[in-house]
Length: 158
Image (cartoon, rainbow, N blue to C red; front, side):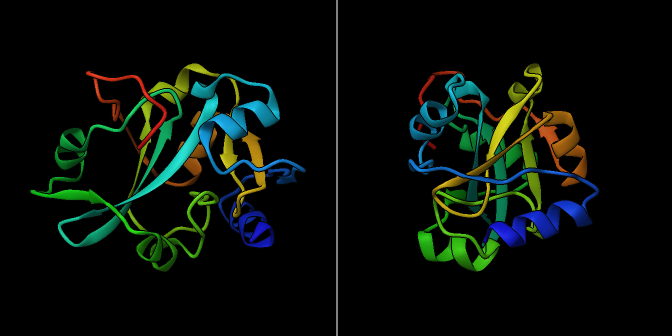
């Protein structure tokens, strides 16, 4: 999977160093601990099903995603988190390692990530990640930048 991410990065005009770590990076807490950063700097990449079609959300690890906001962003009536099988079919990556690179579904990028000089993104599996400037990544993946945080909560879950 790491090779898929590197190839997709090059195709998007990015140069990324996907690192394989000894410890897991499947969750926000694991990834932040592994690289020594704030949980908010971890870009969790989540797949949702919006009116039957998969969409990708790159969100700050510091909060929950507001599904009502996603309905507005994607102009859909209904949205739900995808199952692990739906995630793999839509992205080619397993849950816990989904990279926004190499995905050809609509993407929204959490504006909260733009406050950081660098963020950390999954590199294709549960032990890899890469560091990148958030605006550069958002532009490279042709993402719509929007507020996706649930204003009622500040949790690390989806």
